[in-house]
Image 1 (cartoon, one colour):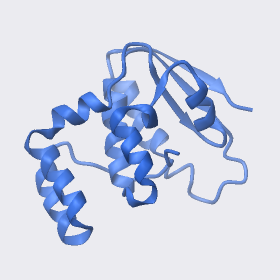
Image 2 (spheres, helix red, strand yellow):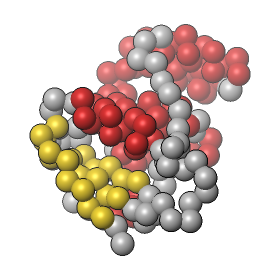
Image 3 (tube, one colour):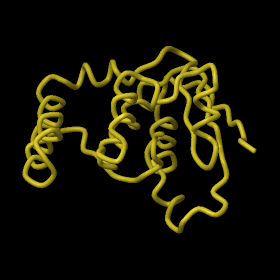
Length: 154
């Protein structure tokens, strides 16, 4: 499932970032970065977008399962998110962070957040959470989001 991990992205220069990734991380990520920087951004946004009132976010234990069972669409059920999810640990944290920001920026209407517990989680999980560091701040700045509904996960 989608990992709650940290990273940071740059809105501009994705093509250069892709080239850099080729030097330090591998050709597939270089190609993906270059494509995003040179015209693939539209396709990326479309592949991470859902309809109004359909965006579902989650954090903590058990929350991804609750999000998957909901009537909305969590990021890992979007076309792009499902590919990233299938690649598993081969996807760098920064790619999930960037995809999460695009997903949160495309949300509109009422969004739902499934909140699980962090009890027993390793140190740093909360501070490195993509939800807290990227998705929630993006949602708060997104003028298309009219309400955030919080659903606790037992």
